[in-house]
Image (cartoon, rainbow, N blue to C red; front, side, top):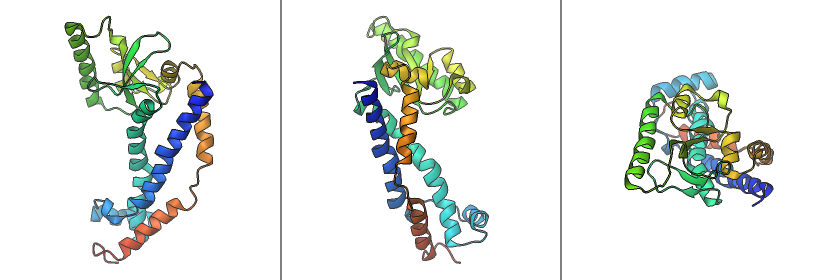
Amino acid sequence: MTEQELTLKIVGYFKENIFEQHINSSLKTHSKLKSYNINPIVVKYLSKVLDGKFSPEGIAKALYYPRVLGTSINTSFGTRIQSMFIDLGIAEGSMIKGMDIEFIDKVDSRKKWCQLKSGPNTINSEDVNPLIKKFTDTINLARTNRALSGISNSDFIVGVLYGEPSELSMHYRKIDAAHPVLIGRDFWHRVTGYIRFYDQLVVALNLSILELDTQDFFEKGCSDLANEIRTSPLFTF
């Protein structure tokens, strides 16, 4: 597959399975009051902050905005990315517990077992030692059972989808001292074989986003939620 063909396939996948799905779920799911667990005290305060008063519109904004702009899209992105690599034939699903994908590194021609992460700050301090231990235990077991001939620490990696090496958090840097953390340009080069693939993909995704039909979807979802809130027995206005 050429670089251009692969770029178009990934852009299409993002559009259909991440962006358009996010828009649809915002309208069909997140605009429904039953999809929320509501803290009545906090939500009233947030309504006052957002709408200047305790109102159905203010409550809707307090619930809908963070869901649609934060939790929903980040969850969709994280769950779909692993499937994308497999569905498009860029990598294979891993049979090793804790690993997301397996692929032949196009730089050193060695097989890599990879745990995927979104960005340079998407790991907590308490996750570092368990992740390193998981990698180490798997490698030791493989060596004991002679299952993976010639395996080394550098064959178990963390792949960070976007960002620059200088942006990696101290938690990722600690992992990198034991197992490579490949981020952004370097990661995409190794998994696709194209040295400038990351830069071209970012440009292509930006262009595709501008073409998305997002007119009124945000306002409509929030309005539908406000109408449901207005008649709900949970609130008295």
